[in-house]
Image (cartoon, rainbow, N blue to C red; front, side, top):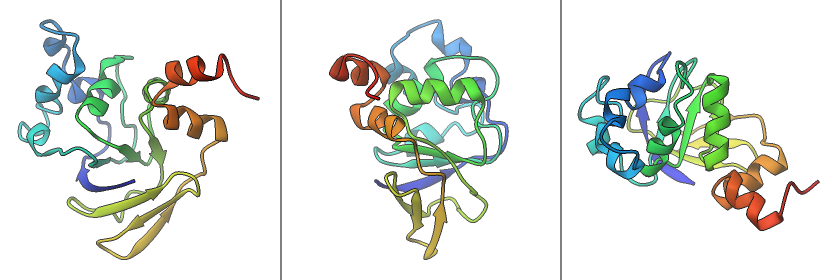
Length: 163
């Protein structure tokens, strides 16, 4: 997968991703996309294009266990989120909906960089800076869940977990 970077900082909580006030009017993630990250940068949602990649620092997705947060990110067309660390519940929710969340050193990645991600081999190529970053290769079952578009699709297809 290949995409352009939108860089965020540390401690991006689920209220920054999609504020609870925006969930009162609709539960449709495609509708909520226009409010994505609006408290951090009101123009970011408009600038995200299908296939783009979010890059953050430590503790991405902290705060509440709001399942809408990764759903809205995925509905915006984001292909993957890279961070130094993720809040545990956000990480699980992302896997459940098939949004790749990759733990790696994001320090050398800048806004606008173009990245190419090889999920199978655990390699991120920063095309813009001609650098390579590695991440812990995903367990096969997790890669399969992403391939199927989320946990529900994976379980339907395989009628349970494949061991």
